[in-house]
Length: 244
Image 1: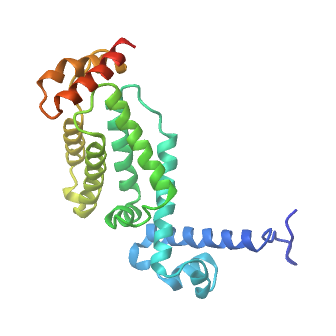
Image 2: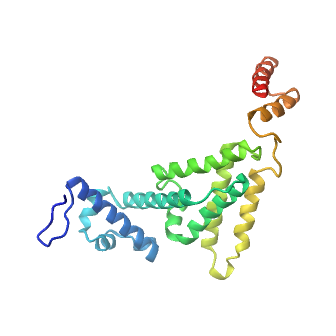
Image 3: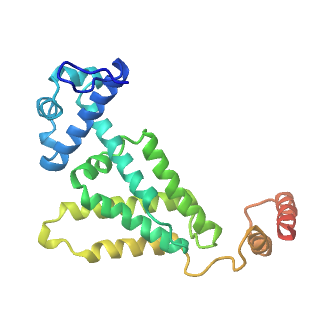
């Protein structure tokens, strides 16, 4: 049971719990200031006042303001991850790609100051578990495309293109005066990304590894990258997969 102060309000369960609660309160106060008043408003004094702590308390939780801003960025990635997890997955992997891109852009437009800090300063918060999990979700979408025979480029390049176009679309949109923000900018960038990353028709008609193995086996004699011995070995492996 929680201890209570003389005023009857619950006290933290212990020093560790109280410290973590204070840290989270400071992060949320900084994030709220950022959203309402912009980056310049996030000062030590303003955050301390909003969080109900003394300014020196901030430096007991964060080395400096950069450390606090890193934590705010991690908070943003965690919020974005929650949105990704709650979003239904379309059956069509290309539509899933579109929907994921739209979700990322909508998050940016709804949280402009936070997004600008998260993605305008690329290293901010990218070591967080939430950021890494979010990237795993993106790579999962890309693997679905590859498994369906719809991926035009390799997986790493696809991830870079998807990430870069979504980030570029949001930051460009936010940089424009309100009367010059044409929704066609967003839809055109999304469709350009889809064209660059996916094929119009499946590269392999038959789903699963057997169909892919047969398609690659048929094209093997035309390639010149592998040596004759490497071609024979790969051919044996593909034959096994095709028969499986």
